[in-house]
Length: 436
Image (cartoon, rainbow, N blue to C red; front, side, top):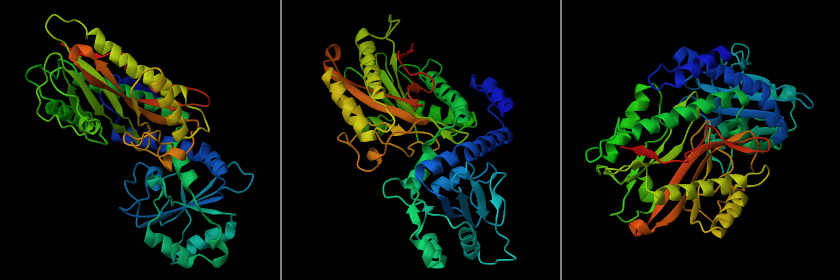
């Protein structure tokens, strides 16, 4: 594990260096997965109060949770794949079984001999009957799409075969499913720091004279440079990047327009304030980052003070938000307190922070949406747990008398909540990137 980490550390700090080979990526993914099964899953089942977790999927229609549990060499489920996780009372271990024709990598053992029991559902019922759990968690959820992966057909088939005495034991595994998706292990965080650094490095190159020639390069060209750079590195993006422009001569666009990349082939000019929204996927982790750059005018060596001060207001809003992180506090509570404090010091805030990790818009407490600043029912009521990661996403509108208009400072950085403290996964932007 640590030999692979060392290689990754050596490779990742140069964007032109080799990214881990597919074979070495697979080793990392499987080692991270086994560590999480062994050391994290028992705690999550204990916390959720679930004895048995049954996850059912079919090939090409995978439950989002099951998708994250497959070994690196399984790109999809096979036929119908059923996973059973059982934690006996007072045990620190979880039994990991697959009601499938194959072992699922080295972490989950096949528990179905089709020659002895041709019916897969009856094989599942035998496993349940032998263990007689107090409850059986299934992945259905009103609030979290990622935890709602049990499809109608599989649910109906399961209920049809399940003996009557077990039906009243069925419960939603929402808390367990969300916990599995949102919780980051210490080993995952070692790699996550590097992924965020890589994201920052790509943005820095995109917002540089290597890519942008003021008066010639368009915002759309920078967008596609980002996409091509990621592909060339052997990485992937989980959403299409955006690059937008704020300048003295043009009215501030609506927030949603800034994110829809409505700037197209607009030519980048000296004096422009640029902004990007960009993220990468690698080793099953995702980043999500927004930063700003300034295009220097002739004779300038730094951005105007009023833009530097505007960025500080964005950092101030970040500090207010993250100071309100507290285990057990809901996303809506954090949102309300942060907005109140920000307005009290004269900011014009908007907060739309979301969980980040195995998915870009992941499961966990939603801390506002750009169009739901009064709170988000359901996902916003979910509480903050330790060892989780977030895209600290927000903006503040700042009056700029020098431009006779408002601008919007839009920031997003990966941050983690530990046992009692918040920290950025790999720093944050506190100075504008400069483009000569």
